[in-house]
Image 1 (cartoon, rainbow, N blue to C red):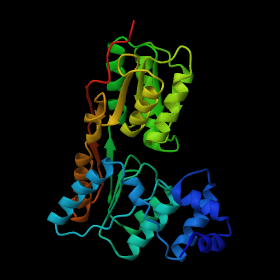
Image 2 (cartoon, one colour):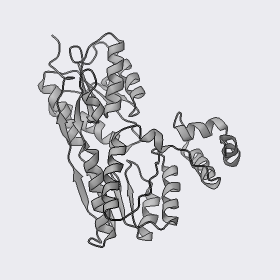
Image 3 (cartoon, one colour):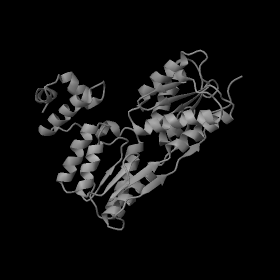
Image 4 (cartoon, rainbow, N blue to C red):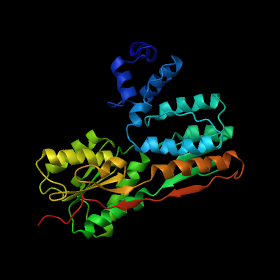
Length: 318
C-alpha cells in the first residue's frame, strides 16, 4: 500500500496525505478525517507511534502501565493518535471491535461525540487531562498549573522580571493550561506579561529553537524563559548557544517533564518533574478499579508536579 492509493481513495493530493500522516503542515479537520478514513479502509497503518515515542516521557509511561497490566494478567494493545482526533476515532473503534476490557486514553484531546459513544457502550475508560468523570469513566489530572507556577516563582525569586514563555501547540488542552498558568503566575507577582514574550511552540526541539530565536530578536530580550516541555527547552538551549549567548549567565531556562536527558544537557536543565511512571501507574490503577467492578462511578486521580533546580537558572546578569 502506498500514499498514492490513499490519496485516490480520499480524493486529495499525495501532499495532503503526507502532511496528515506526518503532521508537517496545516490540514483542515474534515480533510484529515477523509484521509484517516481512507487509511483505515485500505488497512494502511503508518508507524506513527514511533515518532511520538521519541519523547522518552511516553515509553516510561507505557512501561509503567504495562508492568502493572502484565502483573494482573492483562494484554496491552498500544496505538498512537499523533494528537489527531480522526486518528483516535479509528484507533478506538478498532480496539472496541476486539472487545477490550477497558481503554486508557493518554492524550490531551478527545472528541465529545466519541466520549458519548463509548459511554453508551459501557466500556471502562480513563482519560488524561480531558473528559468528564462519570459512570465507568475516570480522569487522571496532572497538576500542570502548579508546576508552571513553581517555575515562575523560582525565576522571579532570582530577580527576573522579563520572563518569556514558549507554549505547546495551543489546540491542546494541556498546552493552554500551562500557558494560562504562566500568565497567572506572572500577574501574581504583579508583573505584566509582555505579549511578545509569549510564543507558541510545537512541543518539539525544532519548535523551541524557532520560538527562542524569535525571542532573541526582541529588544530588550527576556532574561528568563519557561518552556512548556523539555524538548522545547532543549531547542531553546540550542538557539541561545547559536546566538553566542550563555545559559544561565545571559538567559535562565526552565523546562517541563524532567526527562532523564535534561540531567546531561550543558548546563543541566532546571525542570518541572512530572513522573511518567506515576502517570502510567495511576492510569492503570484507575482503569483496573473500573474493570474489576470495585468502582462503578469514576473518580479524579491527581498526579503532582515539582520543580527540580539544576544549573540552567541563576540571578539575571547585571
